Amino acid sequence: GQCITHCPTGALTARDDVSLIMEAILDPEVMTVVQVAPAVRTAWGEGVGLSHDEATPGRLASALHALGFDKVFDTDFAADLTIMEEGSEFVEFMASDKPRPMFTSCCPGWVRFAKLHYSDVVCQLSSAKSPHQMLGAVVKNTLADEAQAAGKRLFCVSIMPCVAKKYECDVPELATVPAGEAPQLAAETAPDVDAVLTVRELDRLLRTVGVQCAALPEVDFDNPLGTSTGAATIFGRTGGVMEAALRSAAYLITGENPDFSTCDTTDATPEVPWVSKTLTIGDATVRIAIASGLENTAQLLDALERGEAEFDFVEIMACPGGCVGGGGQPIHFNREMGAQRADILNRLDNAAPLRYSHENPDIHQLYETWLEQPLSHTAHEWLHTHQEDWQI
Ligand code: SF4
Image (cartoon, rainbow, N blue to C red; front, side, top):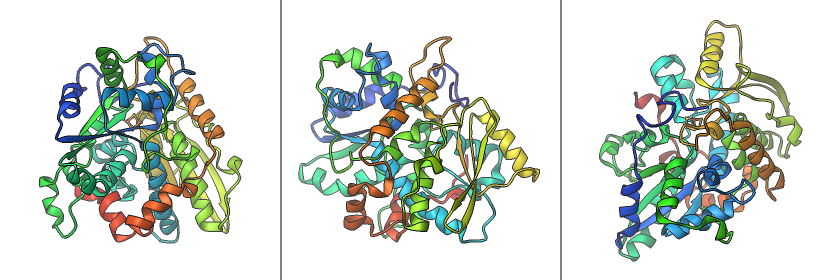
């Protein structure tokens, strides 16, 4: 599956940022920070000749260090952060009389589609920025002093399964406005994420530089922005954001972790227009729906508009199957890899020592040191946007 807002092969519209990033890596006055999206770990090995068993997240972190990045962080950390913010937003939303449903906002392909074709639902999008934008904001704010002390400026790179993230990081309204400055200065503010590389570009870069990936040791992501939970890992497949959000929303509502089977969304596939469920969480009844692929999305939105369906929380991913089938992933002609890659994410989630975003100790630390609590003033400044303020 491919991101349909772009050429199916990525050849016509994908902007090539490889040389820009190599210049930053080679510049002694730049501290380069890189992050990798959940779905990247399912596919990066395909373009450099590694089997899925060899292409582990640890070897990917090693490969990024081998390319010369100073710090290698994990977008999964920010996926946990997204859940803390969006889960809290959803709990507040459920207690309000706002029009239903609330929509997820982590997929720029979907946000762009909504703004272009279904502008009535834009006010119902979560205000949470997407995970890589959140991590960019956290990096630019929390590492600024360290970079300055070293006489360097920060340059933030995201490795994404996605072509739409290239446009997203250029949206001026998504840049964090320095505290005390007027929001209209956003257009003059440096972006939180400076450049995005697709997985295809990353693989090409690894081949060009001659990194012998199979021989690399497995290393941990750098900390404190490298620790994550299984809930964050499944962001890369359809239904994963919803499942991760429900795991934590249920905890916020009842004070107890829900059973994994209560929130299970592994039945969401691109083959059906959408999957829906009604869950009981504490005293609340929560009606959810999940769709991937923009054709399915249009069907779901039309049904909502006609009053034929009603939900409280809806997850949309523009690419069929979610980011595992994203437009920036390696392409194998006549072979659809989405389901196989989603299995990898489910296995990583099952094997993870922590599986609830609210149990990530480094997320707690970030709130203690910088953000106070979910939806705080600083959290809003760094991690949220006003969806209606920016149009396509
Ligand atoms: Fe990008 Fe994922 Fe959305 Fe596709 S589903 S447009 S890869 S964020």
